[in-house]
Length: 448
Image (cartoon, rainbow, N blue to C red; front, top):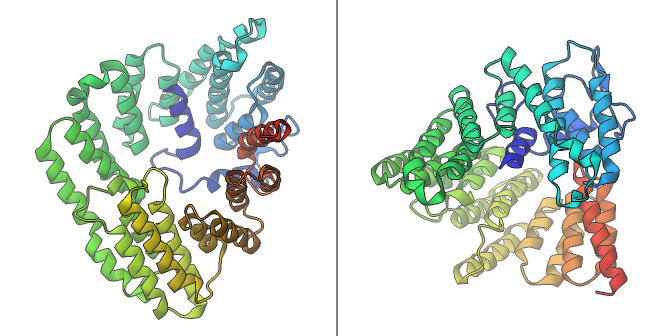
């Protein structure tokens, strides 16, 4: 879908060469919060934005647009257009990134016209339809000057007139820079053009994209995700031999038994290395592809090893183990069946014995323990309150606490913690939580 491609562009692609996914969502937050650098052009001061961006920072410009135009309604169109007018005042020759930001903004205006909330027959809304062509022109201008600009090609794919044209642009992108997110987008386009029932015919192309991506990225979680996707795509194409051969490659590269052996001696590993190993062993996409379920074994090994670490270093190592547990508990991965329930209870007992009882404390420890408590709402609430007390400026812990109060029927407390979270959350997340708060207000008024 077009919106998916734009979202990947904004949240996951590097501005310089767009070959690697950004390390985390917090790198985008730094764009919102950092101050201006020396000898840079600044734009957008005071136009529905609390801070300015650097003119050379396309992601920040796009993010500011999202803030200014978060509520899709007729009343916000004028504000969005004023925002764009400020962007267009940047004198030529404009930065390439500003041109990309214009293309992004134009296309988002076009999406306003398709929003379910804008079905009223309004000349203003009808006018927005023209912005798709303006977006295409902006992306084309960048592409004409740099045929390897992946973001421009993504934009041209998004604004294309047909699914076949979108597909051709994605194939061009892959020739420039194989990337797992583009492979996923390619898969979506192939499905749109040829249909799901014909997937055996086009899945080989997807598999080859993921294989090339696999060998093009550093050995991190996205590499393993690409490898898992390659195996599954080969199987979709009925190429069992290729699937088996690549699966052997994937298993050898991951080396789960070697990772678990190393976790027995954490003194030889940094906390980051412990976290990476556990996140790998617990990665949802790898479950069922490795020759065993190494996740719970790896977590248990790492928790037992905490006894061999000095008290001063124990908390950072425990935090790393919690990252593996949280990956194991991802909603799509921890299906509630008998085996999963047993694993949940086992991990909770292990954390109590190796982390909670020795007195190790951090926000992530108690927030993770809150998740391990499962349906024990009282224990889960108590642990999440502790997490907020330990790290009061972590807005995400406050959001999780709000969720728990909502589950317990304490709507006013849920609303309070959502509101408090806004002070500490990245600004680009505010719109979605403001919607949640408004919904809670409606429930409170209705006495639900």
